[in-house]
Length: 199
Image (cartoon, rainbow, N blue to C red; front, top):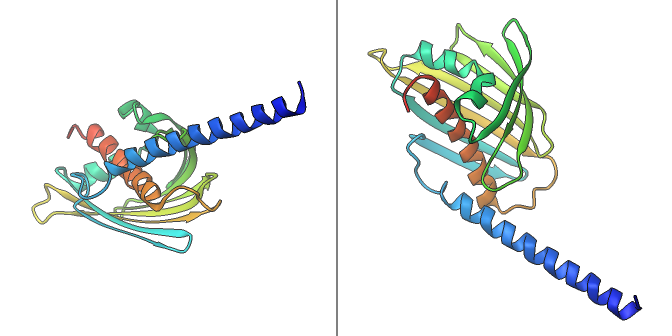
C-alpha cells in the first residue's frame, strides 16, 4: 500500500470515528433532555456545580410509613431483581453490623454500563443512611438519605443530599452530567417504590 493510500485510509478512519462519536454524543444529549424540569419522583430539587463537584439536594414523598421506606432503602442489593431493565446487576459484597458493600452495574442515559462499588452505613435509630463510592472510575460520590414521617404517619419524606466530585475531567456537557445524576436518583426511587408495591 503506497503512502498516499495509507494516509487516505487513516483520514477516513478518523473522520468516520469522529462522526460516530458525534452521533453517540447526540443520542446521549437527547436522552438527557427527558430529565430536564420537574419529574414526578422529585418534589424539590437543587443541583449546582462548583468547579469539579456537583452538589445535589432532592426531596421525595412516599405514600408509605417511614419504617417501611427505610427498610426498603437498606436493601440496595435487591435493585436488579426489582428493576432489571435499569440495574444490570446488584451484588452484596460484604455486610457487617450497620455497614453493607454492594457492587452495582447499571444503565444511565445512553452511556456504557456503569459499575460502582458503594459502601452504605445504616443508622436505624436516626432513620438515616449514608453512602460513598469505594470504586468508581468517574467520580467520588458521597450521599446522605434522611427519612421523616408525615404527621399522621402514613407518608415519608426523603431528604437526599449528594456530592459528586469528578475524577477525570468529565468531557460530557453539564446537561448530560446533570441528567445522568438525576436519572440515577430516580432509578433508586423507582426501585424502592417497586419494593413497596407503590408502582
